[in-house]
Length: 313
Image (cartoon, rainbow, N blue to C red; front, side, top):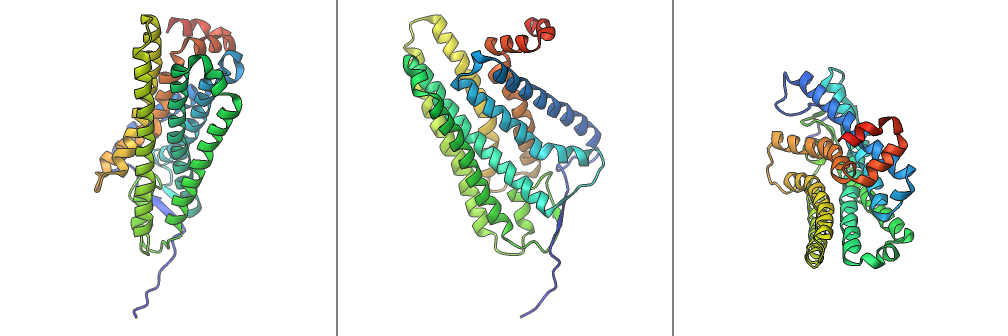
């Protein structure tokens, strides 16, 4: 038996976005702008929902949860990415890497589950309009929201424990811009087959199952909308659902593409994940709420001096 001395890794070096050499300044400016827009948009949505009693409904309760997840999800990876794009250290401690991977999958999974709950909420609102507030009462909304948090936590604990129960005693260079499972596992000294299989199954199939349930909900919604006699009623219902579907495609598409490809391109994977981590959380407030008259009214009441600018948009 040949014995080799290994030094256990206590810090990783994030190599950054593939094929982005020389573009650091441009990318830093672009990503900083997108990140600030993400923070501003989601904080405005939360402010409107909290301050306006008219928005204390199931739909806006779930939208408030979505804004919290979007704030956390983008903040899991973007601040560190901005630091090394600005020329600061690319190192991240082992504990920091564990935390980043955990919160990335915790918030990502919770958001996927939340989209499924929101699709169910829209289904009940359109399919059972007269019983909507009875079915989606405060207790049901609390249970559904809590279930998404718990489901995301269990998912993240499973993946994080499987990934970091392995020994990391070789290279400390992570060929990516944050700590994710496909980038971390190749650095492990032990057998990674179990973590790879569970990661592939857990992330890929969970996304597909949630996406399928969402499609079923919206198929039923589409049937209900087609039975609405009023043209105005059909247009209003379709407008609400089309916004939800757009956001869902932006969220689920990147996850399915990345985790179900056998040998994904590093540049393509990074581009899709940056879209998922940064662009989608920025678009959600626009797609879901800021174009909504109720939200605009709530923001005008919260920020009366800025009301003219909102009215002009």
